Amino acid sequence: MTDQNVELVTFFKALADSSRLKIVGLLAQRPYAVEQLAAMLDLRPSTVSHHLSRLTEAGLVSARAESYYSVYQLEEKALEEKTRRLFSHEDLTAAAANVDTNAFDRKVIADYSLLNGRLKTIPAQRKKLEAILRHVAEAFESGVRYSEKQVNEILARFHEDTATLRRELVGYGFMERGGGGGEYWRKENRN
Image (cartoon, rainbow, N blue to C red; front, side):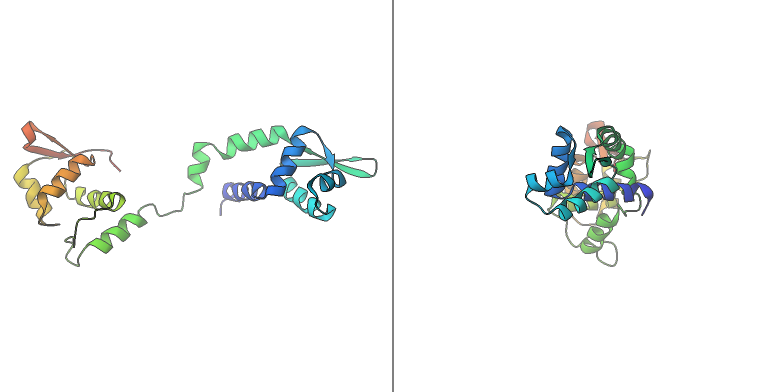
């Protein structure tokens, strides 16, 4: 796990408890000592100390000595900075860096294909159909224009219902049609 992921998990774990959320809410109003928080939340001081420890570990809370007590305060600037940084688009997408994003497509293709690569059936479910269409679209070369007859010949390798496959490829945006419907080409930049 990357340092970024560890920080995200720590942040979410710190806030993934209703008592800790209440503590953050109270500390957003003003600083409190453990005993004050315990009384307001009807919790044992040791339980509140545990929650404060988790919040401190995540950098959301800090303590300062005041007489005999430790007084805790919300680190608002740290919370704002951490939220802005952790929830940036780049960092959120980086959290999924090692995830196999093609696993679903491979599973659907395996489930719906025979050993020879032909389709057993054309899926009715939208997400599964999209996975199959992505796979079928790869049989067409980028930048090449195909006649309807050529498209049907390629699609016949996958399934005998070439009309449905052709219509769905165009409808889902994997291919485009022109020339009065007699010319087809693979659409670029379609995931």
